[in-house]
Amino acid sequence: MSPRVEHGAVQRGRGRRPGGPDTRTVIVDAARSSFAANGYDKSSLRGIARDAGVDPALVHHYFDGKAALFAETMAVPVNPAEVIARIIAGDRDRLGWRLVETFLTIWEPLERRQAMVALARSSMTSEEAARMLREFLGREVFGRIAASTGAPDPQLRGALAASQMIGLVMARYVLRVPGLADTSPTELVERLGPVLQGYLVDEPRQRE
Amino acid sequence: MSPRVEHGAVQRGRGRRPGGPDTRTVIVDAARSSFAANGYDKSSLRGIARDAGVDPALVHHYFDGKAALFAETMAVPVNPAEVIARIIAGDRDRLGWRLVETFLTIWEPLERRQAMVALARSSMTSEEAARMLREFLGREVFGRIAASTGAPDPQLRGALAASQMIGLVMARYVLRVPGLADTSPTELVERLGPVLQGYLVDEPRQRE
Image 1 (tube, rainbow over the protein chains, first blue to last red):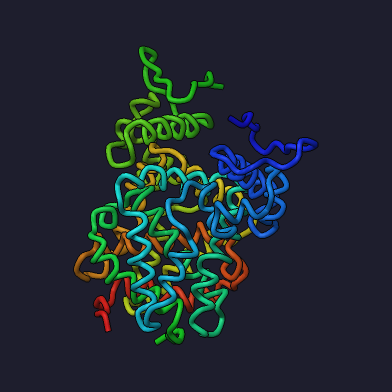
Image 2 (image 1 turned 135 degrees about the vertical axis):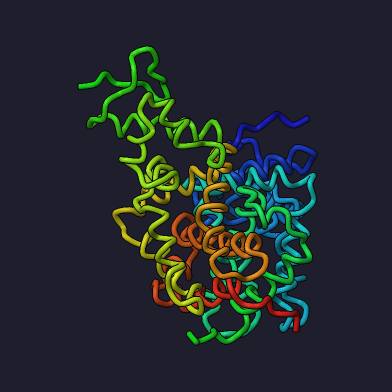
């Protein structure tokens, strides 16, 4: 077995690590350190490979890109790129509903709930975590979804969509506000779908 | 000067405290302990007066009801009852816009921002804080606003409105998501107003 490498430690002078059961963990540890120290945008797969003491090809072998590696460091049980591709792929006139539906599919299962709530909580409590999440949600998640529609102001649209989905997570899963915590996913998709559609796709409504 | 009373301590056997410059602090400390131990709903002004060793009339003298006392324990710089009365009082067809506008007036001033962000963060990090905030937001804030319109499903409507406003705070002030952190309050009122109006007042839109 390979010797254990401490969190973020760099193996130098012994050559690069070969692939192995431990290598994946070493890469995730190096990535976690890099995202925390440099933020999401300024971390690169090449830099993470260097910190982990492995060949960059090995990082690509284990992880489907930076977003997937970030999700793994945050213990998110899905591949963000796949989820976003699925949301973007369908009918533009249903984008808002599909976003809410997909989002709830990820958050609802009880066996994931505790880990996801812990993640939401920790992301709110430090400037470091806030920076990582801001860059990840802004660029990789809501930025991509908003850019896919061709509507003007994609950055503001994506951010408005992010604000409602962050608020849904906080109100339903973390605070468990009565009336929202006990509403069915189907009802939530019906209520929130048109709002997300409005933020992402529709012309802004004028003050009546 | 009165002797300092430790956080949550009860003075017994010496009779009730007279009013004085220290009494207000003693009441706030007792209230903070009670909200943390019993939640918002189960705390009473009478119980808090007893814990503080003061006459209940003194609590009413210093604080305009339980919501105001709660706001003081959370270092919120406004009286919730007054703010909510102002939001409810106006034209029902502008309720959503007025809610967003009033909300931003409270959060925007830079000299308050740091304290409010600290409050938002701490409210997300413990089960105890989550319970207090859930009961306070559900009952005193969004519950009252939603009930004022006479629309069906006030609890769900209030909770949906709460989710968007919580998400706005998190995305704009805590995470500072690009595109939302740098948008003017006027633009936010225009974008979010119709959504809050929809949650609180309008008939739910059907899937098109």
